[in-house]
Length: 385
Ligand code: EPU
Image (cartoon, rainbow, N blue to C red; front, top):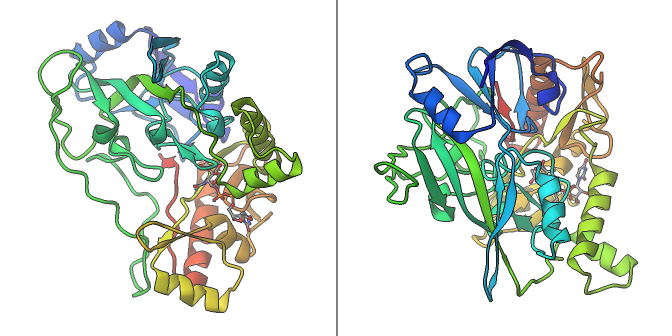
């Protein structure tokens, strides 16, 4: 593993923002990474784990050592009468992995087709789409502790998955770069559930790992395993998929059919990051109490809202942003995608890209107008550096 100096990150972040890494290492072998971590030169150095760069806003050059995960490989670990245990290494492309599992005849990931990014990044934000979240198919993962080089394994409970959330997003180094608004009594999104400090008993080598309050910037995921049951059931609850069933007069589509529909829906609604730089949904869909939901509906009857099991309601952030008139608007080269207001885009392409500052100025302006109109503080999804 050779260190690359002053490496451009433009091809390694899906916004296509211009930024450089002072130092970058391509991680292709786990043992080499472990040796490096244990070397005195690496100790206490800040570092940034980079997967597909599809959930990242770079607001300047990266001073931390960038660890670009390029671990490749996928395999069937085990098949039994209940299902298939499938493994992919972190550097595999997520969509290619989904396609491969279906080609092998192992359905289950079809609703998650065409999500940009790498397999290693998929548990970090518990990716989800069209009624399925990663945690629904997740079995376990392996990672390397970046402070000791030790390998360890986490099951789903230990990953503390939540809506676009996991233990990998929490930790001492976590920064909230969009400061919360402070001066209003209006309801805010509920605080994240606190993560319990926990010590792992399952590890791949060495003594138990102390996870403290989180693993943000502390771990590099190397392998992710999924359990795909043989008793496959189509997940068709999502309105767009129900529409497809009706359009095609097919109430019992195959997994491959759902995969094709999901790809078609995404292609229609969301920009392809290879053509128009973006990081998918820029904000999480917020949740509100039933009182607040009723209050907004009284003023805005067309509010898109979904009841949750705990009596609260999830609101469509895209609708809130759209209602504030942001669709198609821009600041500098950063814009709001005309077909989906939840997606911010790089309007300048690779030649004349937006800056991370423009993206964040636009994001803050959107946050402010949604807050002023609805009393809801939108929480950004991507990591801002
Ligand atoms: N809407 C508008 N105007 C807009 C955008 C949306 O009125 O400009 C309305 C839509 O008409 C719809 C509702 O808002 O009634 C929800 O929109 P959509 O179905 O596009 O889904 P979403 O809630 O905006 C979420 C995920 C997506 C995921 C889709 C499908 C989040 C933050 N986003 O989007 O995930 O693909 O559902 O499951 O949960 C991502 O995370 O990057 C991502 C793309």
